Image 1: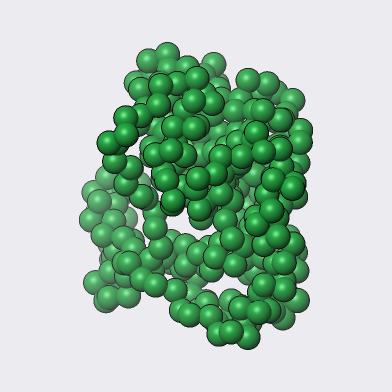
Image 2: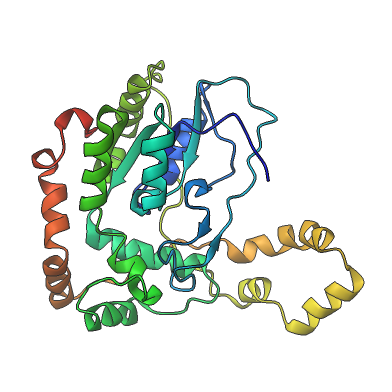
Length: 308
């Protein structure tokens, strides 16, 4: 067991594919914000998964938070965590409400149809074992009448994650001024103003007007070329040979992970265009979410919203 007195107190809790990766990079570059993980931790969801987190990771899958690195911690007042599924997690919500009274929470939102399709693209570029086309995914979702079930990992990511209305309202109503709600449109329209509003809320100095903020983790697909597929999934005889020649798992990772990494690098790609018929079906399925985003101030205290 590892225990740390430095508990994260600035939580980017999602949803996924809503600009959280860019916000994570921009925030952790600030001198007063420390981020102890290279990317996401999901430390508040550790244990048996409450819901599927991908088509190949059903409910009950073990979630093990990576060990944080505090050797460079310099008493920064804010310790950042980015975990894009925390917004849906009852386990995370209860922990923040009951055990983390000083924590600040950032929730980011996106049009549900765009989130659904972007989530499919994300799984397609990250998961070697997921090979379902966008058209087939949409057909599966329609066959379920666009209703999510935690017992159906094949469609959960695409039907549950776009539905951010109820979890967002729950966090906002329970935690009040400790929460900020940010539509993805604000991050796209004026990233610096959006970031500076967050910094002001945290009582930190805003960034200068000429600050450049590069975007991160934009859309793409897994590289389809033969050499990339070879690096992602080498022949079994090579894997067996490597284990014989290098019995140490740690040594194999140190040698081969950097060599294989280019095979996992996504290539920029646009998503297939939706037919008008499919778009109408999706707009009907996600009508409540679309209305929520369009009329955010009708559901959320305007003081909690950052929008540019």
